[in-house]
Length: 174
Image 1: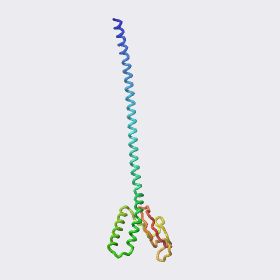
Image 2 (image 1 turned 90 degrees about the horizontal axis):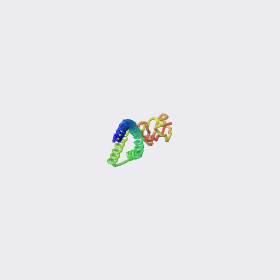
Image 3 (image 1 turned 45 degrees about the horizontal axis):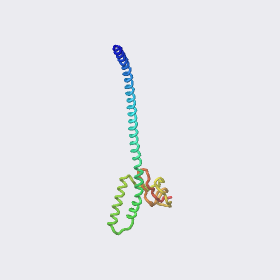
Image 4 (image 1 turned 180 degrees about the vertical axis):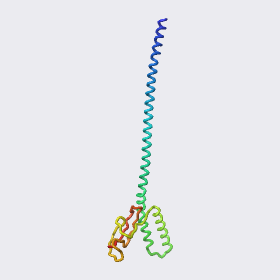
């Protein structure tokens, strides 16, 4: 019996000696796990910050593109309505015996012009010929006008700021 007790005591001592080693291994493993978790957290934070920065840049870029596209879109839409404005001008220039009808067309024309002004559309000036805003369709001899001056406007031109929507079709004095 004493041999069994001696063996049990030896086993217990061996187990007790082995336990601190296991605890050390467990502590090292726990520390490694904590380090790997910290590294993973740092990696995820970095990824999150990069995604947030990328989204912010995307938002700014799309807002900038939107503001840059707005004048082009406005120009295209207004350009489609210019023939309507031309027709209203022709209707006002035509003889009409019904004053109420003519007054109604004038009101529509004025309202249309006000809307174009709100959009920043203005008529191209037609005093001096400027090839960047006028299209010379005819040259005429004129004693009343200096050379390079516009004699007749066949079709008004329009612009938004410096962007020409439609060139004015004019005759120019030689």
